Image (cartoon, rainbow, N blue to C red; front, side, top):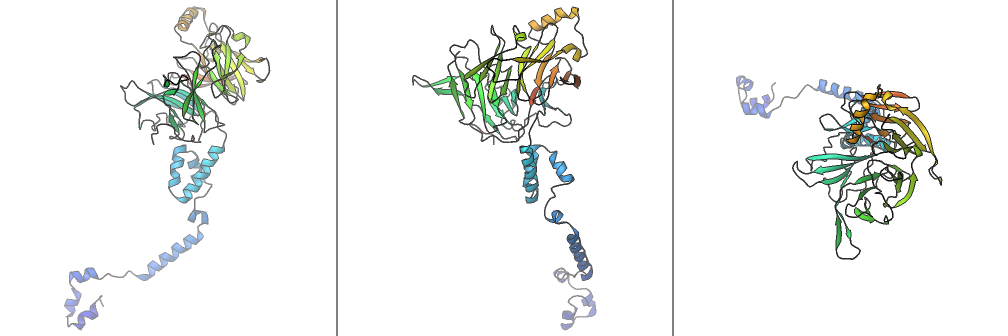
Length: 437
């Protein structure tokens, strides 16, 4: 009998009327589904849940292809995926903890391509480790230029508009997208209490020690004063003067040739009568002077520099006439008198498959007078006896000083030199001054 049939007979309706009930009553009455298939499907689902492992039912497994996929994601994406669920937060947190505690090494180089755009090239090849377009900066700035890379942090010159003459110096960590600081104007109270002294921020040099990832410092020479350097501390968020240089006949800050070692900055100076390495502490005071190797006497800027590898101070010099490269190491850093050990000598043109011809010498001298270099050592590996060179035309390569093996990195001119980058996944303490977030 159709639903409601008994009610219809009670009011004396005919069978014909019962077979054609009003539409409104048909909408109000729902036909029940057959019970047995539903019960069977519920039983099957219950059995499947019983057969599933607990990790699949209530959490994400800490092993398997999912973890391998997540481990290959960029660090910011891994942080965002913690918001998916409680299980994903636990899994991603474990991976993030592993990444932070793992020792970091040289990963690649920031460089400009042929079109002039900032790029990043992984040392091991493949997809770039970081987004060199720095999209988090573009939320406020329309244009930026990378000035320096200090292991894990970048120092960028940023403009809010394309035609703006004013700019900011910004310190940022490209791996976290949010750990950054805008350097404030250089200002402090004058000794005569006549008001604050203000100086122009022109040539800042960033100092960052991965062993103390929550702190960094910035040095800059003061163009208005020859006996002081301004030092910015991320702990105070302020600039402070560093004085006591009245008897020093050279500028202590030379960003082109510098390296951080033993918590202090080492700046190479080739523009003085006796080349030396000035050692500064984090407050900007010159606390030591290291004599350079004897064969570097008379070296000209652009053909010599300093570096740190395996915890030891290195220096190198390339003869501008025959391009012979010499590399020294200071094994006993704390010795009273510096004793440099010649570590390696190599003919650079042969590394590039070339041979310096006599008819090219005149052209080479013209290039030197214009400030151009035919070859350049632009980086040293921090953990291995490997140096990175370019011919400033189209070839960039790495050279293993132990095995004497040459490994081409680029032969198209798209990657000619670069700034070495060691990733750090630890955020800075807090953004001082102005924040973009």
